Length: 453
Ligand code: ADP
Image 1 (tube, rainbow, N blue to C red):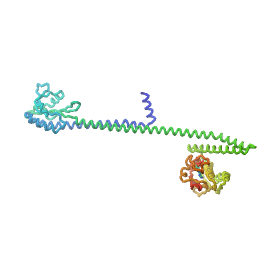
Image 2: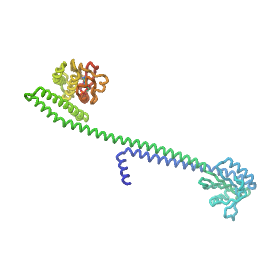
Image 3: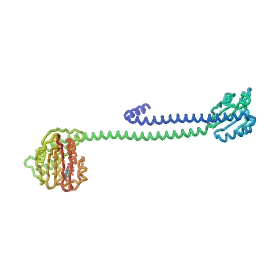
Image 4: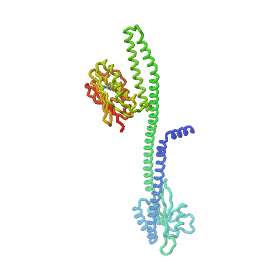
């Protein structure tokens, strides 16, 4: 038991949001219960008071009338029948004679009654009603009432003395029994309605609670997923890191083997293939490491003010051979382009990606790099006459791992990470990147970097 309690306490402590719901579950029904109980109690008391004063008034009037006709029981009986006919809550209406001083039993003669059969008989009052008779004896301005139950139904008995016309002695009593069953039934119905509403509120709150519990579940799940995602990123980053050294060693040995004398043409070809595959793997590992660094904001930027045209020229130069091998013309007209706040290495990485892609995805024609500065910004356009990119693919081009799937691209290897990395680096260096292309007619990638004023 204690264990359950302490677990519950721990759960609430770990999920403070639940306190709000628990408060709703407990506080609202309790408040509702007290308010409705209070309201019904007041309503019932008011109803009782109203009924009593109504019957008191009736008795007052009837007592004044009855004292003139105490010797005409039949006439009184008729009048009683008229009154009872108009008051459905009256279950008994009697005029009884006075008690004799010697009468200790409180046995009184019934002079007139709504039940004419009991007229002329004697009524023995129970102690409670006898007490009322004693109280009202001699007083002509007050009716005395007391509550009693018949088969569980609430009743009120009121007794009012009738003073004789000639003297102030008591000529008899008006005894009226009133059934409160109807009033109580209304009150019970109200209570039932109130509890039904209360039950509904509790159900609604429990549904709310269940929903909230689900939200808490989702929040916990989300937290877990984030942790798993982080673990995955850490693993990928660590694995990529660890792959770097063996890859460098493989490429080193391939290079050494390539220098071995007397290597057959087939052997040379095999070595070239190994080197190509190792290079591809190296690029993939590099890209993965860059992605993880960019995602975690761990990529360092060493900002400098440089003439980026020199960097562009360097990259264009490094692609001269691959372009020539593919029979592509590669153009760049160098002109000074001073830029502040760029990291030269990262800037080169961007240019390598764009010029590399332009050559990779162009079968014939040319690749041209045009860079202009207008005092406000430097705009660099890398154009090619290659396969181009459809409008639909252009939308997704800068997403991680996105590669255009077509017969033209299926034989070209790549990771789909280059443009994502490029776009992130450009964004960090406050630049923009966009693409203009018509499928089959080549593509233009446009970079702009603001010149700090
Ligand atoms: P990768 O080249 O490794 O596949 P990138 O992120 O650099 O990845 O490029 C994503 C995709 O965009 C490529 O797979 C290619 O389909 C398309 N693409 C990029 N540059 C060009 C270009 N100059 N011409 C045509 N398609 C291109």
